[in-house]
Image 1 (cartoon, protein in one colour):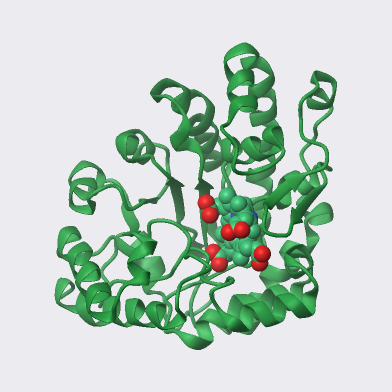
Image 2 (cartoon, rainbow, N blue to C red):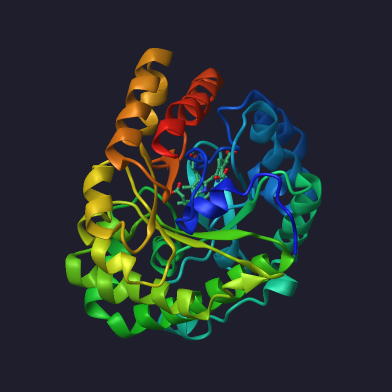
Length: 354
Ligand code: CP3
């Protein structure tokens, strides 16, 4: 058993009472922080940062040194799995992620195998244990993975920023091939998240960044189904503690009820949905995480506080809310805006918890 000094996040994810609403930010360690850019320059590039546990620990801790955040999130990327599968991940400067060998040919697809996290992703597990040591039980550490569908988007398209033509062509013309990829990827994600939990991750989050580009029925069949499979295989307890899970489908506001049935403890919300409506629809089943538009952080301290208050008020009294952005923080965010946000959540939320 580990005694966390601040376990507010874990309690909120399990809908247990808290004194205030906990807050963390997606991509909280990133390019908006000058100290991140310095470490990244020392590492050489983004992937070298991810693959070196000392650097990964250093940047994970950076936002916690600046702000009173209620959680740390492992510094890594969702694309570590396809990289470990041998697809050749690289980042072209200013162009986002790319793969040298995207999955197109049936022969390549049939020979895809799930990586062994203890071998091919050992650097991630080493980072998790090192971060836990450095955190010294101040706040919990969140582990994460991409959803099988979101990973498959990058694996098949070979890059980000596309119109999803390749993966959707496969989805409609060769659903058997896409299911094959998703099955192996779901197994990989399950093994990967369980290995993170064994190494010390105290909550886990599945990023389904692209689930929202699917039709209603395709979402159920090609995204949600595989996240359910992962949640079924996930370790729910480690070291005597419950390990809460969060599912975030960007653009998933229409499907909250079915996502809430997936077996996760909490739903991540993007900024397009009203959190009061989300709570009415699924708040009896799951906790909610979100959902400030990250663009609010380009405004003034007064406006940031007003927008924070709106979300807190919409969620209303009681536990089960983890404050977050509706998507990752922009690299152009002034770091002072993040400070305003975090302090506003802490001070304005107390009245909703008694
Ligand atoms: O939240 C955190 O602080 C943890 C770190 C984290 C990163 N990526 C670091 C990162 C997490 C949780 C991710 C998840 C991730 N990665 C997602 C899902 C969440 C989302 O944003 O929808 C996706 C789709 C990726 C894939 C990926 N990695 C993209 C599309 C990019 C380029 C983004 C950009 O803004 O250029 C990355 C690179 C990346 N991952 C950066 C960081 C800090 C920027 C890299 C740099 O330093 O150049």
